[in-house]
Length: 458
Image (tube, rainbow, N blue to C red):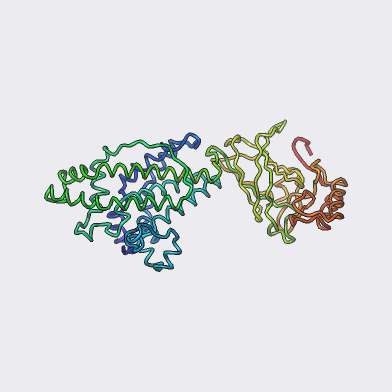
């Protein structure tokens, strides 16, 4: 069990003494991550590599300001009676809390669960196209995985107190690594997909714990050989004993981190890192509640097109995705580029095609556009107001650019025949075609709603 200090002055000491592999070791591990990325991960490798190296020790630097940070860096796995008895523990954090209490589990460290959580957060960052966050989470992940491959971060005898070797933690991970950093050179295989993240993480924690005895034994032998536990003779003997395993552990840490980053990327749908992202806000008239505060359902098939800013306003790229009930959706484009203006066009199978008022440009890979904030956000002011929100007109069933008698007849027939389910004549998303849908088309047909585009000049 470790006491997690919160006072600032003691936290600084904790950081200096127990900072994973030390700044040098963590940089070595993070330096060798991107070389494991397969060619399918078309990442800007120089940018990623530089960032991972520069931010390799960020988690250590957070310890002084975040009281929850320190437990993420270790797990005294051999403090668990069930590990001593069986060689493994329950992988569920909640199950261990039930068995041992929350305070006890936190005191033993939460490293494996932190790694699992960070991998999941990384997947979501990839899904959202948030590449800056993805790099930060990956740098953090490299640090935590590195800690998971440092034997003295996986044992209750983390600083040799139980074997009369006080200070061994910093002697091994900092002084030894700094002295022989130029000897820590390795190559790795390409990253592979991990089918079970939790198993993968706990397995390398268990394996790392097996190296504890050799780290402690190496320190004892080197101390006896040199007559003290410091100096070049001591370090040379210690490296002779533990150098190869130290290189192997760091090599495995780099590869394991790459495996987890690759897995998060694959599970996120393998997004293109060179894509630009549009954050769109739009309400569909039929889906919107009577107060205009939200949509009653989340539209699942919304197509967003980017068109050139000048005649003939050619289609550049099209993506289909969903909107939340708050009307927000993200769409990633791989053909569009920063600094070039594009008209934003929103389509669904039963709403009027709606264009942005003007062409918009991506900056630093992102663009936000809100159709709901004002009628003038749409070309030709082609929006209808519900409450405080401006909504895209519903009712163009046959997608001819008009809401008229043809659309009314389609809805009227389905309403008469009690058609239900996911059908084009259901304008409200409630899976029924009825009088409510009928009224929407009737009203929009009466006021002659049609699409407005720069192509038509209307």
